[in-house]
Image (cartoon, rainbow, N blue to C red; front, side, top):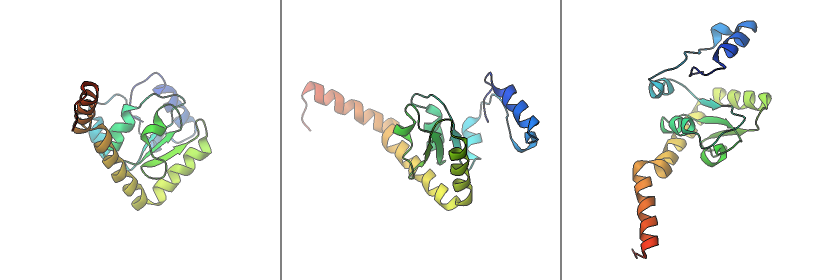
Length: 145
């Protein structure tokens, strides 16, 4: 769990109480998040509410499969079964099952990660953004291709 938000200490306390403190890594705030992500096998965002998540886009850009809750804009980013998995919010069992599926089928997880990277390049790269703006300007100005 990367980040130093207000719930970090509480999360560490829960892990310690369960005897799982040594099994988790809560490094706090990091300046090298892309490097950290490249060392992971999967990215999980169990949000209860979300907009368009930049962290999902960053994870997909590093070719990580994504497990996210089906809230906010997550379903617009994660193609369930192709670039990762979407689970209902606040459903611990569904989240755990998705994690187990990723962990027990690393080849499929890697395929999902590559598909996610391709999707980010196709939809959210600088080249894609410039092309979308160009198309908008051309359409509004009545320019024909």
